[in-house]
Amino acid sequence: MANIKNKLYPIITLVAALLLWQVIVDVKNVPAYIIPSPTSIVKTLISDFKVIMDNTKVTIYESIVGFGISIILSFVLAVLMDSFKIVRKSLYPILVISQTIPTIAIAPLFIIWFGFGPMPKIIVVIITCFFPIVISLIDGFEKVDRDYINLFRTMKASRLQTFYHLKLPYAMVNLFSGLKIAATYMVMASVIGEWLGGDSGIGVYMVRAKSAYALDKVFAAIIVIVLISIIIIYIIDFISKRLIHWK
Image 1 (tube, one colour):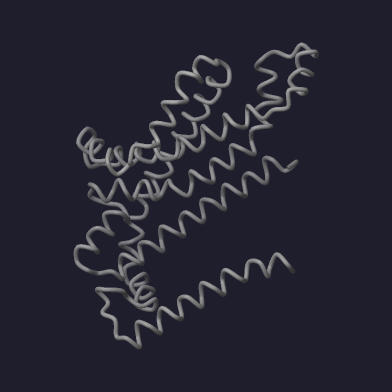
Image 2: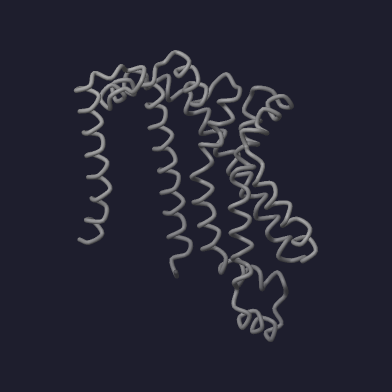
């Protein structure tokens, strides 16, 4: 019962905010090119549904491919950095510095180098999602109890056995925490790449709608982006509960 009540609070707050938004727009007669009402956004979402979905499929493809590649790269690099201290000392500062570079500043370079297709957007997603995943994994490997490691050594377990039976399961909680953080960014990263250049995608749809001052379409696209991100996070949370049920 308490859990249901906790979920009701944000829902009630959101509904109240939408009602207030609707009332202000109607009472003040705010033009749609400044801020559309929630009802006009819903109508646009319904009338433009096919066009939005066609563009959304492109964004989802770019996001999932980039996210998948970032997971693989993060896992490989985290294992190398955990196994070889010189790799960690050499790459860790570079990883931190790389996150200070604004994505929106380097995304145009990828468009120049790789064209207007999905590749530049996939690279932007990889760069955005890579850091939280690899850092979470490294942190998980480091938090393994030293007594457990010593126990495995007394049992003459190999490094591979120690990694597979101890370090990897121990780091799973951190891994999924990193995946959830990265998942909140991955669609946004793809959209940013589409803003800067492309011929399809929900980001391209938003840019065209903004240029036409069709803000109802912009808000409709934002709703779609938010829903996709929430669904992906829930999927990751569902998988994590099945894989690390002992926690």
